[in-house]
Length: 95
Image (cartoon, rainbow, N blue to C red; front, side):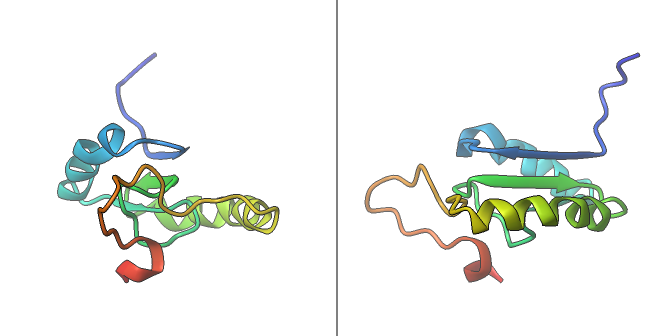
């Protein structure tokens, strides 16, 4: 049965317009959003982890080995789709 609820969500390669409104709603509802490796999130980042505060640490812990492997293999998870001339801070720069 579909209830229309999700407790946690992770995704790669989203565009800013895919997530901007959802992030506002999530944060206003008390949820948390970061990159999939736990850094501060910018709409230009290539990975996203969104969850309620209760689940966030557990989901991040489950993702950590996979994220470490991706990064070690050279995956590019930093900013993407940044308009030319647009200065953006992402990840650790936001903290």
